[in-house]
Length: 342
Ligand SMILES: *Cc1c(COP(=O)(O)O)cnc(C)c1O
Image (cartoon, rainbow, N blue to C red; front, side, top):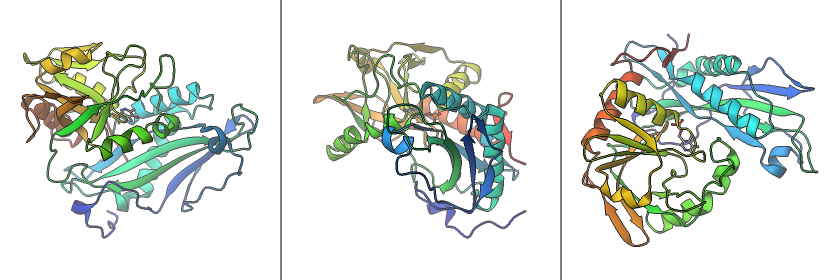
């Protein structure tokens, strides 16, 4: 067993910390090279690189962590590989082969074994694969050369001392257009979300609830997490839309709800007007798994969920405990969900 870095694991924040190794592969003359693990954390590209001029970049996010029996594992990396391929295709970028993606992620996690937080610390190793157009582009077109990189950084529990329900607002900004790029993990979706989130934070809200931009009547998602709702009779309802990012956490929770907890699951259009009738609300994403929402403010009108502002609602808590139990190896996982790094 490799010696761990001497970090205060239990008190890590959610931020970037430079680790020892990263993975880099280059695409040139129509092909990807083998890629290498390197200690060089600097990227040197042309001042006119496609990513700098026209934001040709996409990314992924997943976690590696230590299970109770001491294995380093990752949660469903094949889903990230596939989603990154979808993102690349939509942005006219070359696909990094899905099997090579999983291999590379495993390799960089292994190379940074000393940075993988120990079991029980609440911390994890956040893994960030990303790709960008690297050669000069001035007329608008896709780049010819690309770099695919994976960096890792240890992160603390998203909510220290347990998750308190959030207050969020219905945004007047739009996140995604019909037939646009809302369904892929493109950097450009985040660039344009910065002004709305800074505005929301200044007003005292934790997040924005975005509505569908065509009719502004249906719930989409926040800047970086999908919604789940629990009805008063215990059903899980989650918005279906072509313009939301297909969260792996949300899809996993829907499976867990159905197959482990025997719940009914509805993936359908969700109207803002019916949100007041739900019993619980949560935001799902890799970072926090589920963040409970206690209150949604729609232009001064408050929607307060019966689950309150003190703790997660009981059903969302059960979903959270089951999914994190599966991730940590305490509950048997569905076939193929846990990838052991070795
Ligand atoms: C990454 C992301 C999510 C969460 O997806 P996970 O796969 O669960 O981490 C949700 N919404 C947006 C816009 C995202 O970029």
